[in-house]
Structures are given as C-alpha cells and as structure tokens.
Length: 378
Image (cartoon, rainbow, N blue to C red; front, side, top):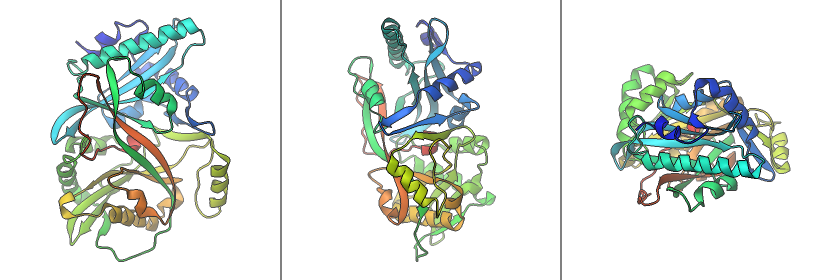
C-alpha cells in the first residue's frame, strides 16, 4: 500500500501538488506561531512552499485537508531521509508544517478535526510498511513555549501514536561576539576544494555515533542542491595537524525566512540600543540568520566542543559575519552546554524540544545517544 492510497481514503484529504504552493503559503501566513501573548512569528516560505522541503531531501510528502469548497485549511509534511540510529542506517521521517485553520462553524470544525486525526492515525499505523514511503522512526521539533501545539499533539492521549520527549535543546542566536584573540589548542581554517574527500569521510565516520545522524550521501546531496553552498563553507578544526572537528556556515533564506511580527517592548528597546553598534533584528522584517551546520567532532580525540565553537565564532568575527547578519545561530543540547562558552556575547536563546513520534504500543528509543538535528532545516 502507498501513502496516497491511505490518505485518499479520508474525505477531503490528498497529497499536495506543486500547484497547491500558493494556497499553502497563504495558510502559513494566516497561521502565525504564537509562543506568548507578547511574542509571535511566522515562517515565510515564498515563493515556493516545496523548495525548503527539497533542501532536506528529495523524498517528501505533503498532506492537505480541504473544506467542502475545496479550499486548503490544513497541511502537514513528512520528509524522509537516511539516518543512523544506534549505529545502524535506517529511514527517518521528520514531521513538520502542521497547520489547521479550524472552521468557525462548530459542526464543520469537529468534522475537520476528526477527519484529520483519523487520517494521521491511519498513516502512523502503516508508516513502517508503506511501499513507497516507509519510515523506521519519526521525529519532530516543537518550540517549548508553543503551548497550542503541545496541547494538541504532545498531551493528547487518544489516537494511535505518542510524542515522547527525546531531548530538550536550544537555539543560541548570537547578535555580536565579544570574544578576543587568545591562545588556543585548535587551528580553525576554511576548507579548500581539495579537502572535500577528507571532510566527507570525517563527517560519515562520526555522524554514526549520533542518533538521527546524517550519512555521507546526504552531505553530497546538500553540496549539490543547497544554493551558495560548497565544501568551502566548512571550517576545519585541527589539533596538531589532525582533523578533529568540522562546522559549516549556510542559511536557507531563499527558501525559508523567519519574520517576527510581535515582540515584547524590552526586546524592541534592546534592539534599538544595539543598532548603534551592530546589525540588529527588527519586527516585521525578515531575519538574516547565518546557521552553523554539520557540527561534528571526534569524541575519541577529547575535543572540547565549547572551545571549538568559541574558536569558530572568533573566526566568524574576523570575517565580519556579525555585521552582515542579524544572528549567527547554532544548536545546543544539554549534554554539550555550548551556550556557556559564549558568555562574552550578546545573544538570544530559544528553548525547543525534540520528540520521537511512535505508535503507543511501541517502546521509544533510549535517549542516551546525542541526537543530530540541523537548525537551518527545522
């Protein structure tokens, strides 16, 4: 059975076509993400909704829910890629883009929600055996302050599947890095085209040690499909001429931008104050964010990830990166605690949560292995 066979059993639900992009974009703009009464944002995916999904993988499905007039009122995406779980290569599905514009009529609202839920249950029950789109594991990310999403997904007890917290994590966004030159045990430099093979092999070897780690083939896919991205986007971190870590810089701004449309007075005041010294984000403008990606290191070499990230940020400061972007952002997990390494920085920290989505009778993964997640693709 194919995923389209399951989806089409449910009235007014289908797999989206490229021609649906404009209508989905309108739904996204309407359904702003509200984390508190004073803060909300939305993801601008124009001009092509599907473009951002294709940056993650060429293998994805988008489900849409229509009302009786065939207007799209709900959307959900699943992106499938190869990944490592406990050292074994598996098919991983990433759930995202869940939006539903609930009709004002109570009867129609209930009907839409029940239809949407039943379809999801059906897909989840069959996800491991689908002919064209089977997934061994499913994950998703939710902003910690997004109570609406957590109430409707994480805390629901009915249905075929459960959301189990795998790890908390943070999006650390640096407005300006104030660190100064210092003696370091690491040498940080940009990679050259001749070092492509070394980067690919290092990435492949050490990603296997993380749950949801990426494969070498996926990095090759990214090098071929990400705009303005090449092996020269990587920083190589070396100790005594041995490669011990890699980090890349890149952003998906041509396919996805974040726009903050409502912010507390204190944040707006601080932004105005800081704008005298550096580039700062503004309400109702697209944020210019440079992401640190592919953060990988050799655990056996005793690498200090805190020193590694600090040295990379210092290299970016020398490249004038903080003057070109509103933020330089990277992911931080409790095990790494990287935010402690940037005490001398003007920064913003957003708390998020990574969940495994699984059938309720299935035991969730052990969460003792550090997960891999790219902030630029969330």
